[in-house]
Structures are given as structure tokens and as C-alpha cells.
Image 1: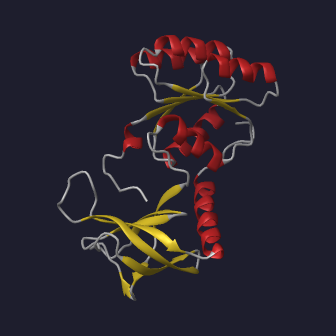
Image 2 (image 1 turned 180 degrees about the vertical axis):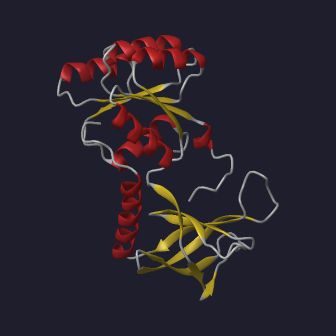
Length: 248
């Protein structure tokens, strides 16, 4: 579980969606924000190139647009990218193998076809632009956490955590020491989850302006059923907030 950095690197990255369909562009932008990225959307290739000439995004996701082919857009974007660091992800409903090959040859990191799988999209973006890619989706949520039969609080009566399949972050002014093994229990969708976890990092109140007080817990022992419940809960949270068109 990665530390809860208030200056989260992903929040400093700028992702751009290029899609002539305003509905799917809006849905994709919202999903990227749930992935904890800054995201903007435009509806023409020209708009995207003009914006990129001012500030180059870390990654561009392009679907079909009316004013330029995907291949030509990638070539023009690469010419603007003096650093050579921009990544391009192509989403196309076309089954034209030649187009996919040409996009990859022009510099696209991959080509995806709808319907998009949220986990696949997340992992593709992580590998494309992050130094240390995460393989599991994570979400901000609020659940009550009980450790060693004592409820963990963060000072205001709520239990805000960052949750993934592999662990969670608990905001608390009194984190446990590193490598402390703790039995914890929490509820998701009225189902109780009980696991053994270990503290892999801890930040006390006031130790660093960049990190929230709390601790990251990695699951050591968890049943297949409980892990499936966490996975299902995370997916459902994404589905509630975002509806990506099958045309994306």
C-alpha cells in the first residue's frame, strides 16, 4: 500500500482525453479522476495539439475524431513532444489491424477496443506513465476499522481509508510501529472482513507536511472469499460513479 502523500505524484500528472463524442469523453475524464489523475477532455485533434503545445500531457487517450486520423494525430503530437515522454493510448472500435499496427508504429503504447475493462485501463495507464506502477485499483472510502478489538479513530469520529485488494491506509494520529502485525476487521457492504495485516509504513502527526498521519497496512492473511468481496466492492464503487459508453 503506497503512502498517502498529500502531493501524490499521480495528482501532478495531466491526462488528456481526445474524443469527438462528448458523452464518452466526459465519462472517460471522470474515470481518470477516480484513478486520481488530473484530466481534461477536448473534442478535436486540433484542440488537443494546441493544448499540448502549451502544456504537454503525460498521457493522451484518443478515440476517433473527425478532423484527423489517429495515426496522423500521434505523429503530430510526437513532433511537439520535445521531451519524448508523452504516452498515447488509442481506443478504437475499428477492427482494422492495419490501423492498429500503424498507430503502434507511430508511437502509441497500446490499442484498446471497447468495451473497456476498468482494471485493464488502469494497469495500462500505470505501466505507461508511473515509475512504480500499481497493479490493483484503489479507492478512497470510509469504513470502520477495528484493530486488536479496538476501534481506530482519526480524531473526528470517521474512519477514512484508502483501500485496495492488497491493503489499506488508515488515517490515525497514533500509528503503530513498522512491521507490527495486527488482526483487523472492517465491513464492506454489510459483510465483515477479517484479515491479518502488517504495518509497512507509518507517519505521525506533524512529522511531514507531505504525508497524512496514519499507517499503511498490507494484508498478510486473507481468505479468497474476503479478497473477492474487496475486489467486488471496489469495482462497484467505480461503476456507481462512472458509466463508460460501450462505444468508448
